[in-house]
Image (cartoon, rainbow, N blue to C red; front, side, top):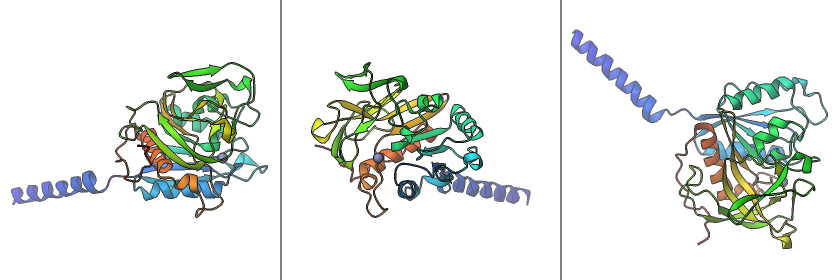
Length: 293
Ligand code: ZN
């Protein structure tokens, strides 16, 4: 009788292990910081949530701040339940307690995505700019840091004074991988085409880039800088991993949103998100990734 009971207990534990090990992998918990932006944040934040949740890897909440000019003191955010924070914000300063909690979250090893115009935000917050690596607009200039670009196989600083952040008109452009053995880029084509989008240039900051993943030629004929610009990279901040993508200008609606619908944007975003949260990437490369042969 005792033997049979033991067998039943072992069988029960085996079943529980199967459930835990094979069928019930918990999704990565994500919080999108949003609510103010010079972009169409209701579209971008919803699109990011859908892209992430439809992968099956992520469970996404949103922290929506008061609108611009309203009292931000109520925007107290608890980051503890999350593994990854997605920054889709560009507006009024967060309250000190939220800023402190956010930096503690990252310092303690939390993951962060700096998405598109989030690198415009908070020009005077030193730690935020260090976390982003590069930023633009909102009064940034030579006092915000050097203008970093790519030339002759290396990062080059432009030491001349000038504004930080600009872009030409939106167009389709090519991205080139500069670190092929990073978990985010491994297995992806070295060159790929991105759908119509803005191409940020003349970005300034501390330039504390850990791994430069992709650059793109900013063609003067499109209003660009005439330089190879740094568009996707990682930053180490404390013990936290930061994935920074300047791609993904939101369209007028979820249905009309070409830069964010691009398979390359979505693939890179999902791989960057998993890496920032866990340090590894388990996703296969999708068949529709727009490689350049
Ligand atoms: Zn934009």
